[in-house]
Length: 143
Image (cartoon, rainbow, N blue to C red; front, side, top):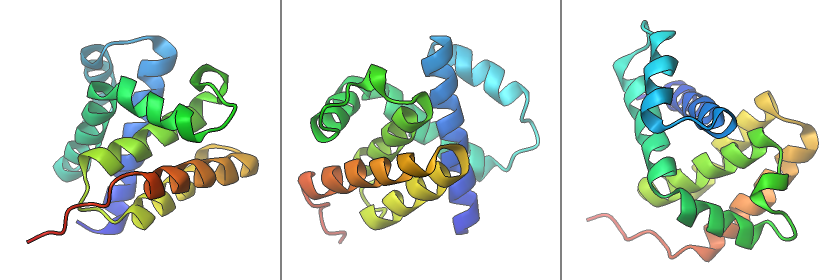
């Protein structure tokens, strides 16, 4: 899967998280309406986006606690919605896809933040994800 495909998946996962967050919608509601408008997508793109979205929702309490611990003086509900969900997607990828190098996950999150958020947000997201990446146990070496 080429990098652009993964980025597209990450952007779609962000949009799904945003829809779930802002619309207070369940996973089923989001998936039904979200994919109805995007029928022509590559299966690989859709699959990885759904996987990220599921990890982010299934482990949302754990992910939000990790983010709040590292975003000093910031509660989740005070963060810009886009930033909060970029962070959630990044941490979900750290936890759910440990084979992906953490610097790649952080860089992808920053590229997405540059596209969907403000310049100040890019620095904030970088600081929080970098802190989390250093704090998490190192990924198990692959055999």
